[in-house]
Amino acid sequence: MNKKRVAILILSIVAIIVLSLFFFRSPQKTKKTALPAANSPASPDLHSFKGVITLIADVVTGNIPDAAQNQTPVAAPPEKSKIQGGFSLAIIGDTKLFDDSPASGNLQKAVDSISKQNVDMVFAVGDLVFKCGDTSSCENSYSDWKTAMSPLISKTYEVVGNHDRSGGSLADDVWQKEFDLPTNGPADFQKQAYSFDFQNSHFVVLDTEKPRGGAVNLEQRLWLEQDLAAHKLQHTFVLFHEPAFPTSQFKRKSLDADTRQRDALWKIMVQNNVTAVINGHEHFFTRKKVGSIYQFIVGNTDAPENAIPVPKLSDYSYVGNIYAIVTVSGAKMNMSLYSGDGKLINSFDF
Image (cartoon, rainbow, N blue to C red; front, side, top):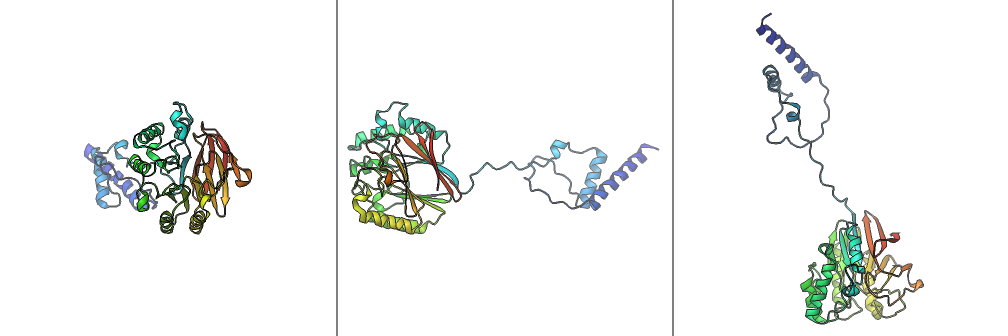
């Protein structure tokens, strides 16, 4: 048998095999993959007669791509993204003693510990610095504070405290210059009252120090009512410095100094299903449920211990240098309390 006949015989056998596969194979569901790279050789289409003939010709001529070339690249898995409603935030409060702290001070320890927990955002709930009485010293104090906070500063949201506004309108000007914050609040409270959404939660920051300390004034309350009505997410967190219901031995030193305005504020939050209120000002940690809303006071990351919690005024309390981590996972939330150097003190689901 000459070479020509051998070639014809081989071609016939290959054609029979390929045609059998084409006409008799069972249909299967295919997994969607990425398109082949631009420089990858195209595979013949076995669902067409032309494709079958092309494959036969490739077999006869030996023009068959190797296995590595002929594989369709599988789509690379997308970067691991956060599940909707799955995130965490850190709370630090009252850091006004940091000026006198060395590099290993209480604020610096907390920053180092929080940095290791990979939180999505940080809230500093007031009294960042000890005093803001004149422009120069105020700017220097905030510069030092931001240096201490540098590993976290890009994802930190600041809240005005009474010490931060000790210089009145001068302090307002410095605050607005020093911090990069949302500007969607009331006209007179640029970067001092604001709100934003993150995943399944809405966050609102208010100012308890302007125009005077110990109150969230009517302008902010009207804005808050409109803001909450327009943002109906699964959870809402409201943050401000002085608590509505203080839990120390000092009476009438927070929003309870004006119960009319305090109660009007709380009514707005109850009517709009606020999940939790987070404050500073009192230099310890307390947890208290007021009606349908949890009030958390995180008031001593680096501050003097000049007050003690009164047991009957809260559901849980702790005295010491602390920070907190709130974890949100769908409908579930947890607040874990840590010592400044990162030891877990308490964990609470709410």
